[in-house]
Amino acid sequence: QFQLAESGGGSVQAGGSLRLSCAISGNFGSSYCMSWFRQAPGNEREGVAFLAWGDWPTETTNTDYADSVKGRFTISQDRAKNTLYLQMNNLRPEDSGIYFCAARGRIGYCYEDSRDSDFDSRGQGTQVIVSA
Image (tube, rainbow, N blue to C red):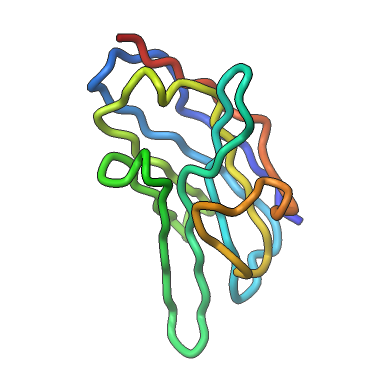
């Protein structure tokens, strides 16, 4: 189990940028999958970006993105700070919603069509509003 806390949301105009942070505590172990989901009013929660990390046989990081954000969003981590990031550039009004980070202590299926229910832990969310 992890404890997660998001920050960095806000209001921006279309074309602007935001960087979301997710502070994570818990037992990371030797492999994990971390992710960002978002949910707009009236919509289901959807996967945005995924990061899989493992340390055997060598330290490896793989990322995956929803088609709608490829080329605009970047997921990354700072292991020393136990923090997950989502850099969002060229934001669009349709990117608006509440963004949640989620994590689990195994890689499993760590791709953009994963479900929120596949994750053991998630934060409370941070709101992003993009105006036209």
